Length: 346
Image: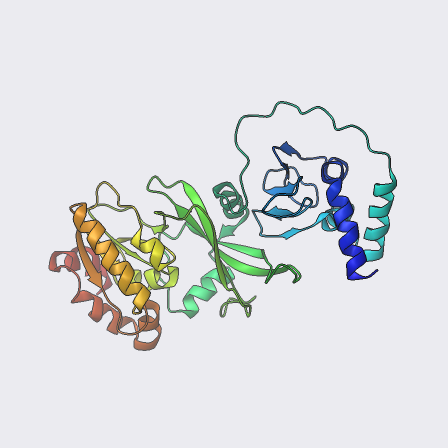
């Protein structure tokens, strides 16, 4: 079967999208213009959405699994739900389905009033985090130790997923790689998003793929948090950079906002009186620093900028060593915070 023939078959299935879903994904249900189910294998749940009508976002029959990032068309649904491996068998099943008489759609049943979780939602992030496991003894721990990070106390917001889905583009096959899953939380500790770092199977480095990191969910104002903030805390961009600074300041709460733009917009705890800004040594880091200093000062919070010698604090840790990093940060902290947060690290 040619690509054109397959495209035409997928289009014909798209015209019958709801009937296809009711037949092959009967563990799900309709929510507005989407069919909602756990995944393409017809697992009960609410993270996968199949578009039932053509919209500006795309044609009918296209689907996305918000928990894994998988996406495809109704031929993929038939393949996965029926457990087929040979494409010829998928085509035959699709043609058989299209030849069947169409029953009238069943009347919609009243569902609970909660809105469906869109692709990349906080609900999908919570599901992904729940599917993951603690990092002790996993490739995540190996990865962090390879980057010089050994102080792993209070890292419950980091977890390990052994087979996290990765798809390089709309046309490439879905791959699975081990991944570090980081929970993005609000000031109350509720998970609003998740961040994935795909890893090499042995944890020696990141996976050899084009996009090694990707976030999902509601990120603005929130962060990956280590420790509970009191009067003082530190905030930076990357997880590894923040954990590197924490190697030398082990008793200070810290937060990784995941990007310069999100660092500039991070929300302040009510108890916060002094904010240490762990800047990256690049133009984006400079911009985040300036915006965050302005916001903190406007809120009556003292802002102190901590700068790395090299690109970021993980670069300092790996290339210059722990003692050099400790010495560099010691002279940048407020004197009373040196004794308070660094005493046991000396």
